[in-house]
Length: 133
Length: 441
Image: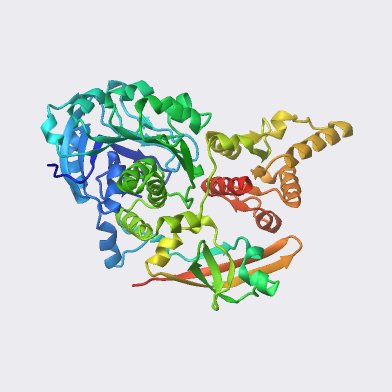
């Protein structure tokens, strides 16, 4: 977080890239290399608005566990099946993924839990990032 | 003919020193106008500065700013009597950040004799007022310079800004500033009225995790721009980055400028590494205005927060361990939420109370809970009453946020039934904003 300690200012542009190049990635501790790129992070998420999305409307059900999903930028950031049916919206706290997707990142994941009953439809999924580099 | 197409950043350079919990190293970085400078740098924008700073900082500040794309570093004044160091105890603004400016009562500023000619080529200035003479600065800036002024600190009244007339284009104000409390805390309309004598084109109210609103005077139109909430690493200076980004994109209109500023500010809150911040901003710049607007976010205007009632489910008793409860309360109240405290409002029954008293209190508590839009639970000590309240709320379909710093209730029913279960107050606060923002819609 900025410069660690109070010896000098070390959070200069270029320091993180130097550390990245040298393989001193997250955990470096001082001004550079300590914070992973948010686009590289894997994430677990509970999808939103599942009942209003294509998949549920088409199948009257939720996708089963282990179904493969990917992240796409439609109007919202969504999770969709490999055939392009939207399963649910990604919470807005992950809106930064829009920039990551524009930059060439891809996100593939699987359904870890799903259920549909009187209290609603639930789909929880895990995703991992693939960097464009 | 003017040469400088880049903006001039005007204000103090400070050292931000963040005190961390025991066992962790403190964090230090340049603050004051350095935050906005990082915002310009991340957008790929060259800039110049007219800085007020203590002499001991000049060499390192010059080097630091140069590395961030600063073309001209002009010393506007020197600080003496104080080191210009701010000690920060809450870097993520869960509640009042507790800024402590060391030796502030001994501080004085002597402006240098830099003349008008030095600034003749600049036509846009981003001003952060400080302990320097704003009137003198107004005198030496070009007569047709357009000012964007962030009045979060060191402005006591609207009258302090009169010397900048008629050059103020945009006023930016934060809900965390004292000036907001004094001039417009009942709403954006009142705020706009308070600043109308300055004749700005627009006024922007930055509402922390609830987003921001832009009031354009010409058509009296107010546009709400939602916050982009994520895991906050450090929120110090995010408002300054907002202001810098807003200035850069103002040529595309106030609404697009505010959206881009919101994305840049969010990125700044999620990293303190300049390279990461640069990458985040550059990626977001690839999004169109339509893209950003369709993504949505969290919008909860300051005054609208009072329309929602949050039920505090917690052992809110006099003799309980109150540390986590007090943290949560301070945070919710700082953000202007209306917290209903059943134990305070309805009463704390003594041990051995009769059945009628118990029944009556239970019914009144449940009635209050059902009238609230959200339940914020702090189940310190696995308090059984709190857990029953959580269950009632889940069954009633009222969103439940559980702040459990010691993970005492990491139980299937509590975790899976709640909208949010976390040890992290930042996450709980974000989810509170998010849930009530959805409730508003």
